[in-house]
Picture 1 (cartoon, rainbow, N blue to C red):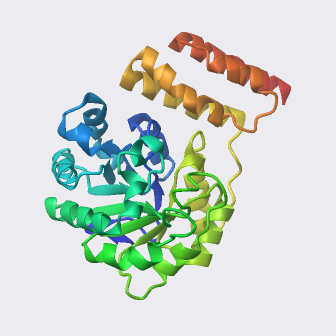
Picture 2 (tube, helix red, strand yellow):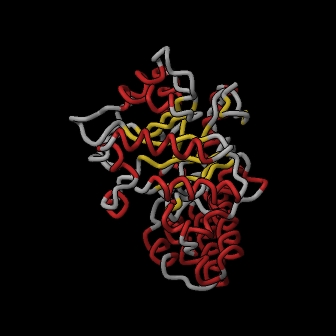
Picture 3 (cartoon, rainbow, N blue to C red):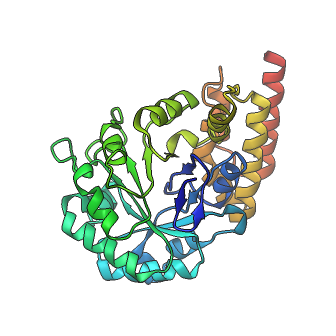
Length: 328
C-alpha cells in the first residue's frame, strides 16, 4: 500500500499532473471518473495567493468527490511560500505540493519553479519552511536538474527527504529540455533504489500508453506514475493502465461515440462551471485532443475551434457523430 502521510493510495497509484489552464475542476472530474488515484489543482502562485488575486484564489476550489487532492503552490520568496501554504491549508485539501519543476519562462524568470534547481540551498530552505508551516503532508515535484550538465536529483533527493516531505515526483527531463526530447528515467530509478529513500517516488514523463506505463513500472521500480499531457483529451488512459495492471486486459481505444460522449460531458461541466462563453473558449484546448487520430477530421476541428454557443457546439458534435457512424 502506497501512503502519503495518512493518505492511502492503493498498491500502484496513478496521479494526474497539475497543468496550468488544464487541470481545472471540470477536467479533474472527468479524469476521476476514469480512475485517477490522486489529483492536483492547477499550480498556484504564492504571490498571487497572498495578494488575494482572483486568478489564484479561484484555483483553491476543490470538491469532496475529488479526494484525495493536493493544492500545488510555486514561488520564489520563502516567506510568501509559507503564507501561501497556510492559505492553501485553509481550503482543506489532503496535501500541499511544491512546484520545483515548471520550466516556463515567465515562472523561471521570477526565480520560481525549476529555477530553484540552480539554487539547491534555497530549495532545501524553502521546502523546510513549507513543511513546518502546515499540518498537512507536503510533497514536491521537480526535474532531473537544470540541464544535462547538472542532473542533480539523485544527489539531493535525500536532503529533500530530510526536510520532512512525504513523497517526491520526478519529471524525467531537465529544465533545459522543457517538454522536448526523450524522457530519461535512469535517475528516477536511481533515486527509488537508493535504500536510504523511504518516501514514495513517483515517475513522470512520456507515459502515453499502458505499454509505456508497464515498462516504467517494471524497469524503474517506482511507487506510482504521474500522467500529464497524455491525459488531455484522453482520460481513458488511466482506465487502460489500471485494467492492464490489475487484470492483464488490454482495453481498446474509445470509438467515436465514446469520445463524443465524454467530450460532451466535459463541455457541460465547463459551461456549468464558467458560464457559456468562457466554458466553450476554454474547451478549445481539449476539443482537438478528444479526436486525435480520427481520419478526415481537419474541417471539423476548425469548426469546433470557432463555435461560441452551447447549442452550436452541441449541434456540431451531433453532426460529427452522425457522419462517422455513416462513414465507418
